[in-house]
Image (tube, rainbow, N blue to C red; front, side):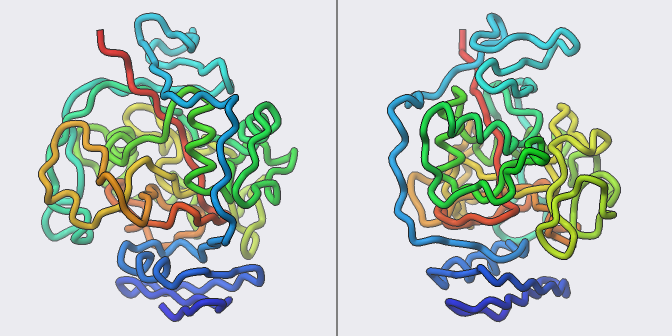
Length: 330
């Protein structure tokens, strides 16, 4: 990768994968972001890291994490079509239920990067997670209702005809603010990974075999309604690929946009041996993103176990998120 502060041409090479991107409005504040992107395979494009300091969340946004109860459904309503699916009454988003239990986290020996290993069993309590990524229309509603001021601004692509597309150009703080307003929080990377791959350790949400037709990545056809973010390619409406859904019914866990997770990133975290409800390190410099995006043209980056660390102030047109709700324990 060739990049220094204020450069606008970024060339990335990973495992023989070569990709270049030119953006006229790109500006890097710190070269540390670039080093981490190389190390963790964030070969998804340029990172816009503004110098704007974090803004406080308005008092109208709940400060505590809401708890989803499968027994009562409050503050959610049950979807009459699917017994394990609920609707969040705050923003109308569909949520799927992930049962408690173990799953295989990380990549097996000889596959992936060092920070993906060792593969290990992790136990998670039950939780709900959004079936799809938060859309620009939902985020617009949140901003209008609360008066929240995004750290950078998200409206460049938040036009009426794309209100069903995932919201992009949001920082980690923007994503977490929305989650609190919605009554939840960002998923931990363990929660994200289990929702994406189920319990059998599959590489992709749909199974072990790569299928280019089941997600939005850089080699996808130019579908009608695709946002033009780079060379005629960009996001698609959330949930466009139902055939690429995970075992639990989660959409777009591979491609479309990278998704912010709750955890701080630590390349050695898996070696700590935490096997029950891991929540990541207590501090750090980078936050975890998962899932790959529309800009990625290497199928490896879209594997469920690939983890990347990005500065929480970073933003780009392929960063988004979804919301998680831990279940009440009776």
